[in-house]
Image (cartoon, rainbow, N blue to C red):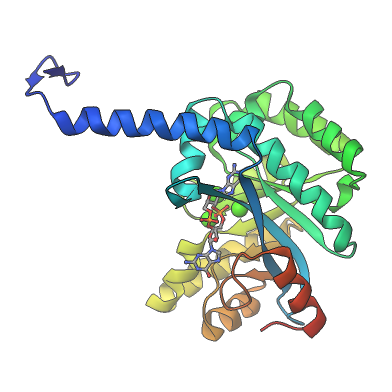
Length: 274
Ligand code: C2E
Ligand code: CA
Ligand code: CA
Ligand code: CA
């Protein structure tokens, strides 16, 4: 039996042991995967909202687990975060992506950074090393972060941001509208870009209230001179509404799914997408 934390005892549940066992195995496999180069990176195009030309790519981690098949990032990223593997995983993704960007000298690169990485005092040094080893110009790089760490440790977050900025990288506030994101953070921490979460984009299909909310949000960002990318754009109607609201960049299945570098090459040859 197990103490459920409120002083009550719940009956023994064998399923919970199995889940714990599976999770542990997943963690062990993930550790091996990172060390043996099994983690790969796919790239999703980000287009200019007016010309539909590719201006940037977002690097997204992928794991094809040996003997099991692909594991979703929403599953393995939280495991990496909880087990302390995220530092290594994150730097591995950044390294892959920076090397790949040699093929696309005119594009910017976005990479997701977990709060746990940002908390690590060695993080900025690791990032600097990747740039040096790959010859990447930091000014082409945008690190995407959610508000979590900024809420909990605003002072330390501001310090770390300052050190990153000194390298020349830019910082985007990711998943805006998905959590407790407030436009106040944009100004307080001086973010360089805002990323509207897919949930806000999907909500546009629900009617004029969501459109008004989006317009107000984008207008506030723009009043601070902060450019806005919308993610999860799947339909023409969403793209039009987002462009009219003032988003300058769009990302979503309408323009391209996360894909292998060769697919980005093909899209670039065609010029505009879709
Ligand atoms: P995110 O940063 O919000 O990334 C966007 C997610 O939305 C990606 O899911 C992408 O494939 C998906 N997406 C893009 N356009 C569309 C669309 O039009 N429709 C729909 N339904 N989905 C769309 P993905 O690749 O599964 O990644 C999920 C999350 O995992 C990411 O959310 C990010 O938070 C995290 N993640 C992925 N790679 C990394 C990484 O290298 N490091 C860290 N720290 N987190 C990562
Ligand atoms: Ca992101
Ligand atoms: Ca998101
Ligand atoms: Ca995210």
